[in-house]
Length: 259
Length: 325
Image (tube, each protein chain N blue to C red):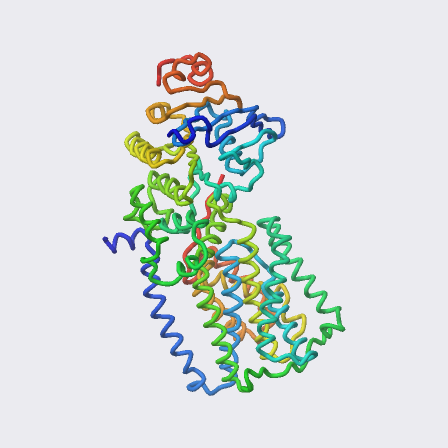
């Protein structure tokens, strides 16, 4: 942890994003510390997913810049951002519907398979290959190993969400952007997933988690950032955020104390 | 591991691997003996055409079935290979093996050039541009007479000589075609199983997500399209020396539609399906030869019923598409 106590791993400087007349993000400044879990919350349309799209290179911001490990990555295309070490999952499950579970992880390992390995990898009987070992390890980690040869489209919903996470992890990211990873899951499934995220944090990953399920996220995060109408309205620990007047007004409406 | 439950839930790798391996091995053995048993020029000729169109279908399947690039100019790439071969053999006295390489490289370069400028257009726009390219290719081959002899076509392309071995009988052409087919199938099979193959299938299923997995979508799409073109160039090379006469009518959009129909019939994203589709369509074309003018109707009819009756093709797996945003 002392490595970057003073210098954050990922910084968003004055990020603005306009779509026509809509200001999806307005001069947002956030820094994300290494080896921490940051929660990003906010009502629908507050710009959470847009922020992820800007960081991951899908939308270039209208103004402002994204800095990762002291290097500006604002104008990089999405695949370059991933290779730098930032991976993401999607709010609506977006798997490769005609590929098997293990192939998803192997696709995620794409930038890591190089040189001779990319040739050997194609030969029959590939169980001895390192790629196979790594991918199977990841599937064991998320609990999908037994289903590795199934087509992703045949997995139940909760497991499809886990596969999203496994696929993103396969790129071996330093930073993982998780867009509502527990959406639609039962509370039990969601808790299992949160345990997984804690393990990832312990192993040295930096996590950004979007969620509107406050209950789930509050026990997990080191810091919470609150967006509303494209602006950052608060930042602090879970406890501080729960007492913050502006947040309660913007996010929870009049029903306080729900979280 | 409950194998049965896995089957029920759609485990396709293990099943198809065993089945596919033994069926293909048996087919290869049979096809090696065919010319010895079948002493009939006419039937052997049909088999040779099936083999060559299998290469065109396999290659189109790489771009269309595996990468999701709907292309209508596969025959034009064969044309690039065929004209390259004819010009080099007839005007420059090149050796046959060197024309094989030249055809592949020429078609690949055309594929790369097209890919660089058109892949970014994406989806339907890309498909329309491929039709445009096919028309431009037809008009150029028709009108640049000093290069292509125009509508008359290149007549009297010499027989291929491979290291002092002169290919002239139908059986010899058959074995040459079989060699090209085995080479194409094995190399494409390995390609599809590799990192490259997974990347293009990811692009087909969801290009944006593929990109966030670190895949350079433009590069891989362009390469896949160009590699498909390169194999078509190889098929074109064979067609030139096999038919000994080539003209612009051999490489029209109609011809590309025929190849596209083959992979729809056999199964998009199924290499083995390409053989099935090529065989069915070539045999149908022969049966309908007296009604040649109706061939296009036949293709239209097949294109109409396949997506309704059997969307995955005869032996392919139905590729699922879901809304992605």
